[in-house]
Image (cartoon, rainbow, N blue to C red):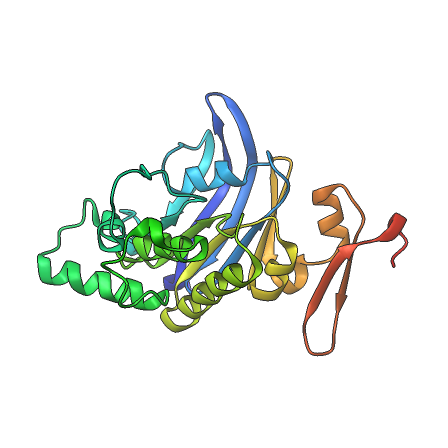
Amino acid sequence: MENDIVLSSKGLSAGYGDRAVLRDVSIEIRRGEFWFLLGPNGVGKTTFLKTVLAELRPVTGEISLHGEFAGRDAIGFVPQRCDINPTLPTTVREFVLLGLVGVRAGAAERDERLSWALDKVALGGMADKDYWSLSGGQRQRALVARALARRPRLLIVDEPTSGLDLSAGYAFLKSLVLLNRAERLTVLFVTHDLAVAARYASHIALFLDGRVEAGPAAGMLNGESLGRAYGIPVEVCRETSGIVHISLAMNGEGR
């Protein structure tokens, strides 16, 4: 339905100065979808995110955020890492409430937003802990809570599991999946982990040297498309249960 559209682009070219990194990108993202942005480094994923966040202006074409998203107050952003000074004593409360900069909210509403955001990422009751005493996985979830404090309807997550161990990465992804399903939160997730995309994506945007191929995950996760994007032979196997396995094809001839 038209009212479900969160973000769309038509003929979008974007880049730096007059140099276009992305060319002729047309995409439509709807409420409640879980999008994974895939492709090797340097092919335009970050450029696309910066254009969505209005850090870059389109060179040609257009990108539109619809309805409540137009002012970008309903967008939350989770960066790869936190750049606050590690020598500065900071509680989890103080860290998460940084997400409300620019949002008008009284003390009671700020506390309510804080509690809601921490509960959503399984950090409830930890508001008064030292942020730097948290594990790596907990700090990543605190980054999500900081974005959630704005009560966004669109959450942009940039390679958040880089450097996390298997258990911490799983807990982080589980919190995002629950948010996506329970809150109908639209998620744009940048990753290099094809296995994670195969498991959780509803839709895929595949970045191929300045171009983007996009659509439902079932149609995009195939050996031909992934091989074209990454420049290596890729094998995709689907079990009858729906589980997808992705691996390198040995010499392009399968395992």
